[in-house]
Image (cartoon, rainbow, N blue to C red; front, side, top):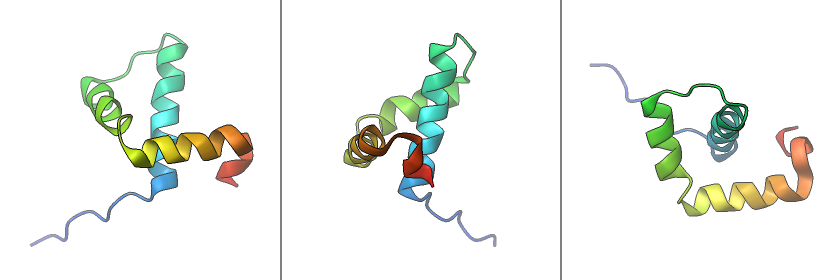
Length: 63
């Protein structure tokens, strides 16, 4: 039996969300799964905390 996927690290999840948001803003297509994931993730405390950190540090937040 395969092992379940490891949970995504908060910074990696936020990076994925940011990528989807940027693609949408640029008029690029995103999949229904990406849009659905973002709609849910964007309501979480994790997303809000990551957004605040990114707002304070910009791209330097990602190292």
